[in-house]
Image (cartoon, protein in one colour):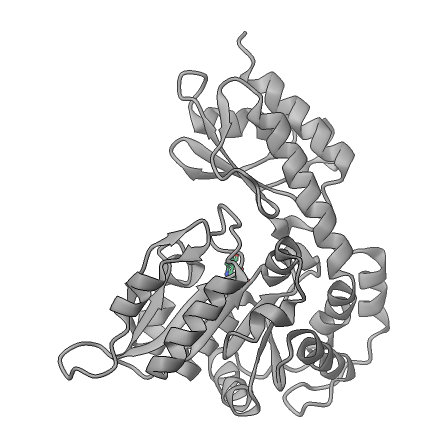
Length: 348
Ligand SMILES: Cc1ncc(COP(=O)(O)O)c(C=O)c1O
């Protein structure tokens, strides 16, 4: 396989911008978002609010920055955030919750994206002087970046009810919100109506090169803009992110439907290969996790041999890898990748 046909399935962040996105970047009229004068950013804020049913939104460079801003805005130091053990905000943001927000965490069980609401009810603490007060419930869509699980609407509704009862805000790290919406067959606003604030990534499944939209009430976004300044400085010509972001958001249904079908096809093919097993099946969105039988080969060797043949997968555990489908890995690429994977584990 030639270098030009490298197939990168490590993440949907490997997605490449479309020609239309690149053209949009070239023709954008750059203005300053600190002054709220950038037209494409303002248009993206408006589109975000339409799609999510929120009052306002702000653009940031990354999902991580949006998550950190949200937790800082919605909590006070010394409070506790309730979340799922696999959540990105807990595991992969450089201990930002402790370092930036000064909060501690409490995990509750989550089974294939379904939060245990009995455990949540028991974990919510708002009265005692001796324990950390619950400042926030932080959810994730899709849940677990190595599995892509979808939280059912009823579960969001039950969480909202408990949160309201205890007057605790709910944040949704919706890095892959649109994957969840597609899998549930609902408009994204049907999910986001149950939370106080939400971020989604413009890259990943949506397929723009960079950026995240953080959305919520007017007051929350005003606060968020201050925190964005504190953490990241002056976000000036954000049209660079917003122009392709507008195209990505307008096309989300087609892009994501194709990715989910592709992931099912990959899981079907690779699940039938001796020595491999799909560990997050049935596949709900665009992420396929595979275990590799150590008797066939160690996972490092598996990854190395695939990379040598132009197929890139991500190691997620001693015996596991992750493959994520996205627009830049076409159906043909995926068939080729599956062929290479099958040949690699076939007894020699
Ligand atoms: C669930 C989830 N949240 C947040 C992020 C962070 O996004 P970024 O890489 O843009 O900081 C990711 C990244 O993969 C993610 O999977």
